[in-house]
Amino acid sequence: MKFYQRVIFLASIGFGLGAIIGPVITAITGTMAASDGTLHLVSDGLVASVGNPIAAFIIQAIVSGLYGAVAMGGSAVYSIEEWSLFRCTFTHYILVMVGIYVTGFICRWFGLKDIEGLLFMLPFMTVPYIIIWLAIYLSYKTQLKEINAELNNIKSSAGEGA
Image 1 (cartoon, rainbow, N blue to C red):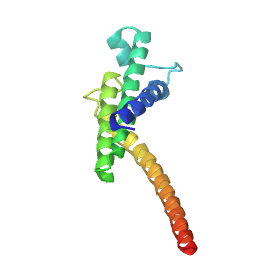
Image 2 (image 1 turned 120 degrees about the vertical axis):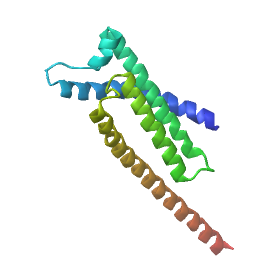
Image 3 (image 1 turned 135 degrees about the vertical axis):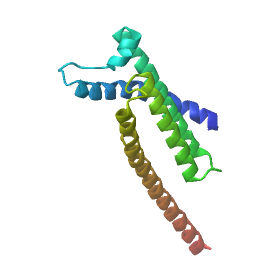
């Protein structure tokens, strides 16, 4: 699969996931923050700026979907063989972090003057990023060990038959 095809494929999946996950996270965090017994599917700031809660929800779903597309489509950088693992990871991490801040500003999850919200997002996104990255890395490392063991078995079997 060519690089741009991989980006489009992954971005398509990411858009769908983001359009679902973004509003769900907003509902959980917004409802918990408000603590008023009401389900908050969209930030009050976005509803106020748009003027209509349904339109605000649709905007949030689209923007969250676009974030998902950037985050997942951006993972295609790991298929660039000329790049080191560090370069791929750093590039993808920057895409994810810039994307979440842009999404947060557009959806009014926090504002430029909301230092607490801005600082909260850094570990809120970085810790899961590291956990997911490590899980994938260790999974690939295990798969490579298994492949190498199979190759060594094939080599030793071929050497015995000669």
